[in-house]
Length: 236
Image (cartoon, rainbow, N blue to C red; front, top):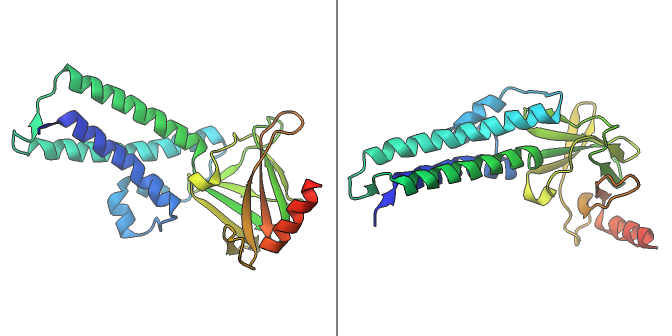
């Protein structure tokens, strides 16, 4: 069975966009030579960046992912030109239509991920325990900052309540999320709770609109037993 070059190129470009997202999800070391090999455009995020707005951060992140997709597509296209003729077919109208539709869809996915699916880093005050509530999309509040050009930072104040004009992102379970106690430049990492454990951890809770209709996201920082107590008290 012969395969259209357009299909091969499109599949390679999709892989080029998926690999960076997967690496960010598993929190791979961006300084690793292996990461550089499979994600060449990551060179752009090796130098720390702090962007002043969500829009600029999203554009930068989208460009980095898109460049990797283009690199993969270009390599696949050049490789297929060297394959024996029985392997690939000449491009017709159908192939060009598939390529146009595929790239349009890929652009849309990359743009959506750039806005909603960037990795996120929650910074808690040292030894903080209790509920943390983040209110999103409130125009009267400042946007969240970003580091390395891609990581969105949620710096939680001692009150545990934070308000931002940034849009509510997709759930943390679908993107890279890191949690840590931060004090005087040092930090201690926390992890999502295994409710059977006893260590301090993080429980992710879906939020709900409050007065003004702004969406919220809530998480709890503490031991599983403290979470069960706080949840029962909240339910009363």
